[in-house]
Amino acid sequence: MRSAVFILVLIGCTHPGAGTERKVIQSAALPTKVHDAAAHEGGLLTVAPPHASAPPSATWKKLFEDETEGFGFGFLTVWGHKWFAPGKELIVEGEEAGGSPAVHRFAQRFVQRVSQVGDQLLAVGSPFLIMSRRSDQWVDERAAAPRTRAAKRRFANIFSYADIIRDGQGRLRTTVSGPVFLYELVARQHEWSVVSAADHSALLRTVRAGPTSGLLCDPSLWRWSSHGDGWYVCEDGRVFSYVAANSASLGNIPVECASSASGANKNEFGYAFICGENVMSLRVGTSGWRTVAGPEDLNSVALGPRCIFANSRNRVWKLCDN
Amino acid sequence: MSIFATLLSTAPFAGRAPTGKELNATASMGAGLGVAGRVALMNAVGELLGIPAGGWARGLSRLFVNGDVRVTGMLRRMLSLHYCAKVSLNLARARQYTDIETMLVLATAARESDSSIGASGSRMVDSFREGGLDYLWKEKEKLGLPRAVTSKWEKVPEFVNPESGSVVSPAMIPAGDQVLAYAAQVSASFMRNFSPAVKKVFGLDPAGLGSVKRSALMVWKEYAFLAPGGRAYDPKKTVAAQSGQPFGCVTALEFLKHQSSDVAASPARQLEQLCEFPELNNVEWIRIAKARTAEALFLERLWVSSSELLKLP
Image: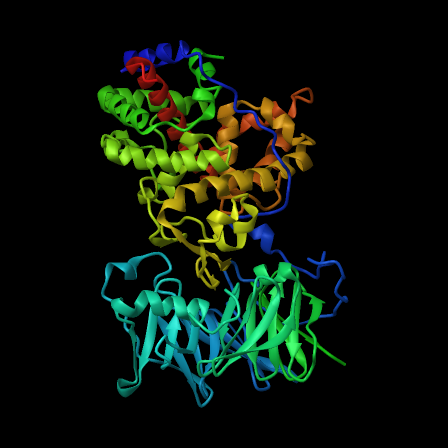
């Protein structure tokens, strides 16, 4: 045993070609594989804007907080005068006007998002979680886990989006999707089932990236909004709504935001997304995108009738105009 | 420094990637060593990194399975020359765009997603599948890869990892890009996170990292890939008490700075002590980083030795 190693050592000794592995190390900013705790510690921040003109400072009001170890919010939504912040084992909901938020608890579940789908609200999450809101209560929809090996894959049991999309043949389809699976509502049976293997890949791509034709660019961000309509951001910063297969300009945003936009929401009040440390929004009836500094590292943002709502890993915030 | 440590102190073959034939010969030599030889070599490498003989028994830092080294499975697959050609191509691409040690790339990719090392073609695969690159879409512009590569990647809309509570933004990438993506992320984490942190904690310029012992630097590279940030080190608590996920690279740097009783010790020397303080082995990130580095150095020795024996060009 020792001799084998010794031989290897001696052979290596004679090798003349070994060079040094010393290269100039560049310095720069921050990629992470692991988002560790330090990266999520919050508090009000003075932010460096991603583009030249600094956004105005803003006073965000904290609406809800959960500092429990291991807690995380998903992505919030505003529907009418109510905001919904889903997360680990709960959905918190409150009124824009104020008052104490209500907390709905769901043991052993993680709710990623509450979405308006048609005229109802759906909450999606894991494991293979779909709930609809009926009479102010959240009720489980029927959705069975797929009986395939893929169902055991990492993140396979997560649903994170609920949309009405328009497929390549122009048909409207009500879907929920996650990082691995795409489900569809089979209306006759009022049951959700995984889209057939033959259609799954192409349809999931449509859910994620929008229609395959009729867009004015290859979007860096696509979101379905309602009934087969949507909106999208081009890499050059142009933003468009997509209604009845027609694109209409929503103005321009900074190019650096186009590639990094996240946490986006669109509702009856307008459009909102996160760009770096800032929140960008376009309110219906106004002509330009507004930029404000966010309160901390945010997951998502949405417009209310008068306020902007945002959530981070542990907190829900609002920022209201006077 | 021992002869063995000296041998491992420089990159073989000026850092180039192994050819398919060399990988095949590497595997053959590994097979020829037998179980006892492989175990002995791995233990010898591990000793340099502060890994106890026999390695760790559980979790992702295991070096030995059923009495043999864990990389035996990979070596067995590399007995196929056809397979080795694919692995070599992936490593050569990684080497083209990054300066991470080739065998460290191989060990990392094999640990993150076993099927990635011999993968080829444009079939799209998700970057998070086996625990890999959860933030690849968000990070892709910072990896230093050309647009010709990253323009083929597709966004997977963000979601929250229910276990960590963090927003995940992965990507779909061609199967043949997986090894390159791992290498690029190791490189980016090292340059963009670790290097500035060293400057901040020890005042050591990036160029000064060149004087750190190569094996220790490889552990840091892997550690920066796994946990680039970290909570502040609390000297009032033991390492074991702080050793969960938040004990990232920055925490370890602060720990080493705090331990320094020898004011004359250079920052480079202090960085090498990552492999010397036994209490740091309480941190799973560090155990995993050491295990991957040990496998990389193990494979390097087989590669160099087999090439010498077989007089491969």
